[in-house]
Length: 246
Image 1 (cartoon, rainbow, N blue to C red):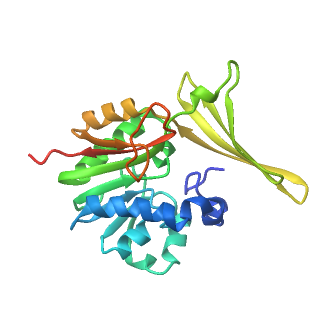
Image 2: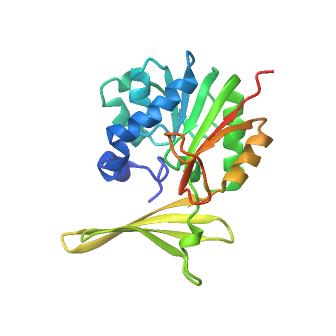
Image 3: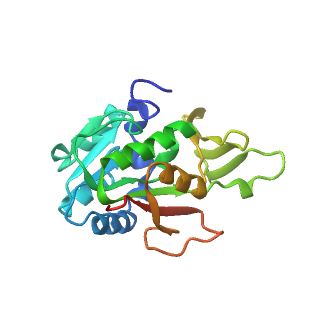
């Protein structure tokens, strides 16, 4: 349920790291941090949707100053409780509009977080906000899924992505509005508990236009953090837009 922390309140934050354990694996984190540290160079980084610090903490440990923006105090409380978490500055607010009074070499949105903005206007605002934060020559990095509409049979709107004895998870899509939601059914003591988080899916070309409106230009697009080529079969992409240096 939504509260002052949005859809990532205490009920989600309490076991977020455990529920997304595959994203916390060292090999997954290291690939992400390697690229972000390279792009940051000697400058600071801005993480939009910093959450519990999955990427911010190891990036800061590499010597990159990190500032975060996040709406959820519950998620940020988990970041603060981890070693090194109290050294990372965080602005509480909507990352589509919240401002930090400094400029950054790199800004980034990972693990589909751009889709937490559930309207096209908010996603456009996010690109504009990032452009205002970037120093000339700075980069904006987004990791996001490619919408899985090819997996929808005619007349069906749900795509399952996890099935086990105690947990079912599926995404629903509305192609008319680009609204989607991730739905989780968990069996606890023989009873089913359901939760749902809304998103807005977005296409690579649509993101490129948002970037162009914000004065950014596409520099690179890969299938993943190891810079494998992006193709028509890729399930996600890591895209890098650059703010012109002049």
